[in-house]
Length: 327
Length: 306
Image (cartoon, rainbow over all chains, first blue to last red; front, side, top):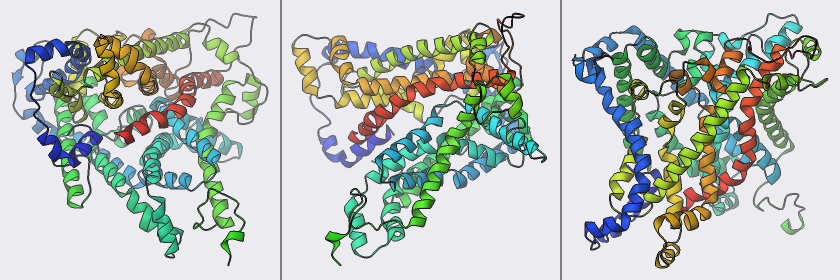
């Protein structure tokens, strides 16, 4: 499963690598004498991950307990799947799940194509300077925090924002888009587009530049117009990247975002803005039902893992490479 | 038809490609302008408003689009002590310390993992790569950090996110692409691993190290939720938390040194809020040209090289 690029390269040349796999190794003692500085260099970072990633992962066990922070994991009583049963019977949990999936679906339809379109648009601009300026502009919001992005939207579209201000000036009833629960899916998608569409474009630009120009030339000399070339040359060239990103998106179907929803929850209400991540936070940390929060977290993690495995299998079935390949 | 005599306006356009129609060209220009404005316009309005004195803001009825009289009063006021100044200092401090800490750890680990077949190479690499597949979940992480007594400590903003496996993989790929002969020759001359790293590997990987540092820095500067979770003491809040309070929750800015009666004009509340927004933007603007230059060179070519 190692890094995406790593394994793919290895996958192609797996036979020779397997043959050359066993060079005669020096005895462990000699290797240790040679390699100990490398070990010393690696250990601090690895230790941090053990402390802040792996040990907490084990602490998910509290989902199977009636966890009492004062008694600790050792002193709390085990309740088996009781917490999960309670969770599955809780309408709040299902509301959050439904919201999450709806928002993911919404983003899939309204966010996903935009970086592709943006890449095609910029790629078709001949002037190098225009291209460069446009790229700089659309990358920029990627480096902003969610608080900042939402602040900008609030200043433009909120109750005291520019839009409401102008409407008041013209004698209209001011509109506050920022606290309208019905429009919330569209609003958060617009925010995500503003922040990340430019950044998402990069990978498509790279894929576009990797398409062999002679394919276009051949298509053109066979009489294909620019839309035919787009359909028969460009899109097939982008297909592996699109499939890869779709798989990743599907694997992350349950993590639609967190800070973005947390900071706008007050404005539109929990009914519209509660997603699984904020649900875990409010139930687990704010309400203090730690076992429950952990159980919801496990649910999210396991479903996400299953989704990505399934999506990858589907990609293989369609003849695409996917995120990782079978060796 | 003699193609040789056709006048070509753009030498970059391949010969087989048709000239765009005027309508198509116009639409494209419109789309580009619209996209550019969508990003730049909100920033422009916030910037201009933050620089506007009371009179201009009142005349515009709030946010100012067309700059009139300009004043730096809002910035002077929030930076002359008080909550905003403290939040800026907290964010800056956490960003600097965190970035140095993260980069040092990541470079060391990436170099430590850059030689195939070294002792424990595979298992250790796995420790890092496995973090891609699953996260510990919010509640257990929270229990860990609070259990270590890091609540209301700046380390709670640094340690949990200090090592990012993606950054580490990027660095490692770069280090592994450095010609082995170079390292071998240094080794023959008696250089140890530490010396090889600092004298040969790092100078050759300046660009990628800078990009990784930048990613870490942006992460620390933008960190918001960890502060919500772990920092209860308001006087320790980083800028993002303060920004949320002021712009999204309507808390009024408090605790400034001014206005001392009779000395100066007080900057309007709106200008102050917008100035805080701008303060949160500035680091992104500062590092940005740098990303432009190094990003495509560093990360993308690195990824292509594999």
